[in-house]
Length: 108
Image (cartoon, rainbow, N blue to C red; front, side):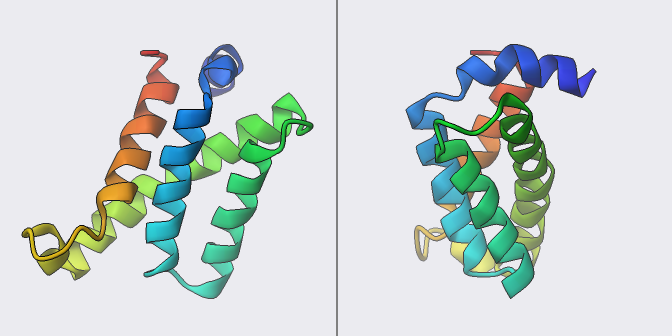
């Protein structure tokens, strides 16, 4: 089911979507360990690669879609101060999660 949705929605990964996901990866890099940070950046690079196969793109979207929402949840739990208006840290991660949800649901 997820593969079918992502196959259908691959065309929806527009430049703006990639920018939103890049912002999420940037925010995640501030709080994740080195291995996860590397993998997130690797998936983002696949999305930016116009020569990547559709399967590689689907896998990258799926991994980002499963990881970024969890990172946002952990981030909010560990660093609540960032979400009380003291700073703008976290905004990119929130936008990336909403982008992932839209891609997964096919809301266009």
